[in-house]
Image (cartoon, rainbow, N blue to C red):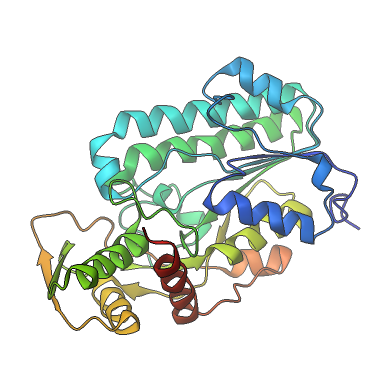
Amino acid sequence: MNAFTNLENYRILVTGGAGFLGQQVVAKLLAAGADREKISIPRSNDQDLRSLAVCEQVVQGQDIVIHLAAHVGGIGLNQKKPAELFYDNLIMGTQLIHAAYQANVQKFVCVGTICAYPKFTPIPFKEDDLWNGYPEETNAPYGVAKKALLVQLQAYRQQYGFNGIFLLPVNLYGPQDNFNPNSSHVIPALIRKVYEAQQKGEDRISVWGDGSPTREFIYSDDAAQGIVMGTQLYDQAEPVNLGTGYEISIHDLINLICKLMEFKGEIIWETDKPNGQPRRCLDVERAKQQFGFTAQIGFEQGLRNTIDWYRQHAS
């Protein structure tokens, strides 16, 4: 039996545990038997993980660290703040890994990003393709910073025997997502655009790009389940994709959102704006084979849930 199957006796640090994905990871940890009293969630307003001293403080006495905290956003934020996204994500992760190793943490679970893959990766993305090119330019600083943490974990495993794993979830969506237009990803951004057009009685919305790029999305509840299963059952050096294997174009995505929200207006494509990576779709076999993870929520149902949540909570 794997040493981490029963989580009841482990002290677990979840960075980003108060965030969109983090809240659901904590819920899944509790469902898997973890003791709420033994789960720690550092808060960025008083525990800034860009400080080495803070990293050293929060890992003390912990058995497992699940690192979800990230400075992240859509194409717009990546273009506006590439330096911040590179520095913040690299420095948080690399200091936390080193501090966890020094504190004799038994397992480190690092959540990476699909943005780490090369711009032109054969579909579906296989984990072995991760180093076959440079990431898509609009989010490369973020993607490279995250990918560096994989190198660090593999190096620490090789030299120190440190048990760190690296999981690569595809784009997340779901209830409680970030709907801020300045930093949101594509699904919440489009849902908000359609909702606001309906509220204002407008008959058109504008969307970045030309609609041709494809994306894959994983419902946040599924992603959380995959992270917890990996925490319990996976102890190898190789990175693991977490996704669904379902690919949809941005053109088809906005049409589906409009259909589900009953918006019949015109879509204006802002073709002077960047498309981002041409295609994204993951090979999800490794997660299935190594720790039995398969996403459960169908895409249309997940979208309905997300739309319903936003309508209830929109101000």
